[in-house]
Length: 273
Image 1 (spheres, helix red, strand yellow):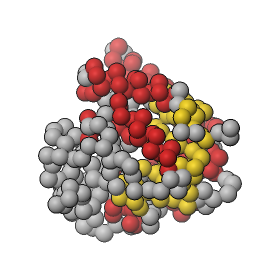
Image 2 (spheres, helix red, strand yellow; image 1 turned 135 degrees about the horizontal axis):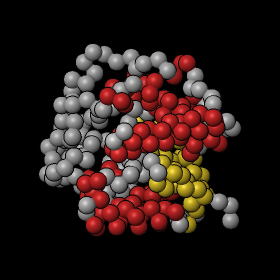
Image 3 (cartoon, rainbow, N blue to C red; image 1 turned 30 degrees about the vertical axis):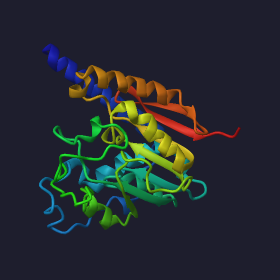
Image 4 (cartoon, one colour; image 1 turned 90 degrees about the horizontal axis):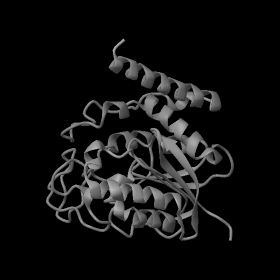
């Protein structure tokens, strides 16, 4: 066996072991009513220049990932009294579907997407900066005269499953959300879309402003193209350290989670003084 094939086999084995470990720790399966595929019209995506990634168009796959994510990050929400939950950049809404199944009151957030390389790329802006130099988003959604989009990419799915939404740009502060209006605020693989990591503190502080109890932030691994940018890579590592040490606005980091072989998940909670 070649060295490359041996390394690939080793990685595949490691992934399988992780899946088996999670399955042994969390053996319960999602309920059948959440596993039916989305009921979408044939022209659901005709308003976009491209569809969302295929893997995110399968409700079954989305629910399985979300079920595991809730078990890992929010096991306390698999029972107990109903809580108000806001998920930023909820996309297909599977995490909120799972939480709604457990009796929680859920609200999603989304916006047009400006991540692709080129002018107006939101992941390089400072918090509060407007989106400039763009007439349409990455999916071909046009911007109105005020610079706001008329739509968002995952609307067909969200409407099919009935998740209530708040549509606003999370990189523009403050958000149109009242103080302490949600028990739990989530940002799962999304904060990178809002601004440069040097500004993530401001985003997390805003999450704490609107949260009464719990904030969860899950980062994506540092992308190879951004890892080549020394300033971005340094700011990314600094942001991880600051999340690990978070102790402000009444919230403290109470746990770090490993994802994709790195400490990328951070759970903040308001602790009694």
